[in-house]
Amino acid sequence: MDVPVSVGPMNEGERIRKPDMYVELAGPKSYGFELVKVVDGASDKVEVIGDDLDKIEEGSRVPFAVIVNVSGDGLEEDLEGVLERRVHEFFNYIEGVMHLNQRDNIWIRISKDAFEKGLRLKHIGEVLKEMFKGEFPFIKHVDVKIITDPEKVKEELERAREIYAKRDERTRSLHEEDVDVFYGCIMCQSFAPTHVCVITPDRPALCGGINYLDARAAAKIDPEGPIFEISKGECLDDVKGIYEGVNETVYSRSQGAIESVALHSALDKPCTSCGCFEAIAFYIPEVNGFGIVHRSYKGETPIGVPFSGLAGQCSGGQQVEGFCGISIAYMKSPKFLQADGGWKRVVWLPKDLKEKVVDAIPEDLRDKIATEEDISNIDELQKFLKEKNHPVVENWGAISEEVVEEEEVRVEEATGVELERPVEASMEESEGIGVEYVTPMPSEGEITVPTISLPGGFMGLPSNVRIILKNVIIQVEELVIIREDKDKKRE
Image (tube, rainbow, N blue to C red; front, side, top):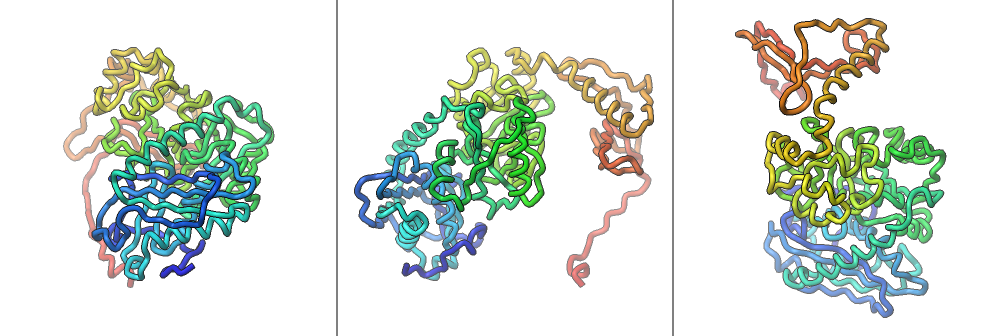
């Protein structure tokens, strides 16, 4: 290939920050997609429809589409999703190119350095063509069409979405109980080294790009590739979706960072997330329910944090209880967060997302789940849920007492010390949610802190004991703030 930059796995994981960016293709502030189709007569043609990079102004954000048509003996439509997901990998092989996400959520940046070296879209097309033919010998011919013309991208985008929907529909009748193996994907480990995506009939890849049948096909055609079989092993918890074989594989493939995952819980050992997820389920303790926000929603969630802020909480291969990256297809699964209550626990969705999954929401819950048009903060959400008599409201009165009692019992069992329960710290039911603590007002020189969580091992306690102090008053006699000289520190 005659390409002016290096191409290979050594470039995976390259991040291109805004100051280093020449142009942004698609992404959250524009639109675009990627699509692979199996056809009868591809002819090894690379075509750019619209402006190439040298005609695009530096710093621009432009709509972008890449359509790859492949042909060869034995190629079937079932392989399209698998091959399409490799577009992410092949883009990231190119020096000075950063590719994130999948399907109609792609986000690509080209660096100034790569542009100055002469990289153009036609070169990217050539790389894709050669990589598909080189990685998959059964692919004989490849056509690559790259589009930057806004109207043409928009026109093709609707067709692509119809194809995505048909693919997702194919696995609806297959469930975890019907199979002996699941599949794992580590394609995103260049960005999230401890992330292992577990794909089952009831839980598509969180990127939304690979369902169970796609993964099965991928493992067969490329046994040494990033998608592989996982033996289910013994089912340890069928509600949470905890399997012995899954735990063993996740532990091994995450370099020992993750010991156990629950496939269908966001509160107890949730699956790790990379950063390519289509949506995020996030726990809202004030209402004991979940909000779910998808990538294309630009506003703030009821907790005052946008999608990007929440993504930072749970991406990178982290296992963070209360946060879980998911695909939109998973929201239509009969096992959707079943260990946490499923749809009965969902309290907020962006309107656009709610419309996409409305058929999966039980009819009696549809008007009880708020959107950004109904509420804008936690107080309004509480009021909305109460007025609509959402199922989460039934437990509001008892939850706080149960949590406090449970924590007290855990500490007593671990330490052998009976905790004092002072009468003056009595609790009363509030009119809103849960329990209020009667707390004295701070005097001069004192600070009230709502919650402090002290780490395991504090004050000589066992490492598995965590102490949570609520409505703490701290008396401050002297506050000293010292500005650190960073240059001196380096010396």
